Length: 264
Image 1 (cartoon, rainbow, N blue to C red):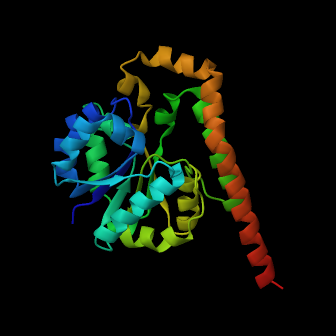
Image 2 (cartoon, helix red, strand yellow):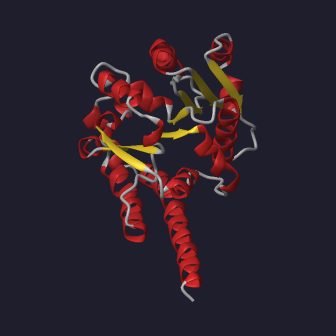
Image 3 (spheres, rainbow, N blue to C red):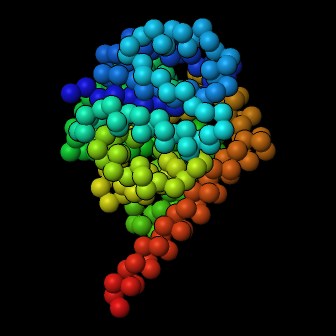
């Protein structure tokens, strides 16, 4: 059974749609279907691209509500996918910019082989950034997200990428936890991992190198230095890292209380 791909898409400027068009033939060779969540502002500004999506049965489009938070948008998209897919069908929860880059010639064969080698028994599976992949990212990206990984290691004795870029999970596994998810911001991605952590597996991959220089057609070193020196970028990272750190602490405290109560 072919897997499906599930991607939220916020692209009011139309930067990502040409990348999506370019890789669609390759997506169709890997996946049975693509579920795409479109933000309200993207729907308003990118009508021609959306007409293209709507004309292709490969794409199942979910139009997100203007008042919805990021976490709520993700949840409704994921809920749509699990209702349509067979229980043991593998869903690849990911992001279009990462996938577009991974399907470029340098990493295409490795990326496709890794995706096609995921049996149901190996799910849920986080494709994590390898040391080589992390080396390409700006230092502020790396250092802040590593805070999350290190805290998770200390609290749960598991080295996990809680701010993941690509997660493979069976539809029934995701459907089981969706009603219990409570986060409404980007910490939702970490809460998903926490819900699945007793079963989760990981695989470090090089194809999760930093994608922005490709997406923006910029010199990698110059863009990396700009992002490292940018207070706006640092604040952007902190804005999702801090809630995830708090979520991990709360989750650990809850598990500790339950364990302590059982030991009474």
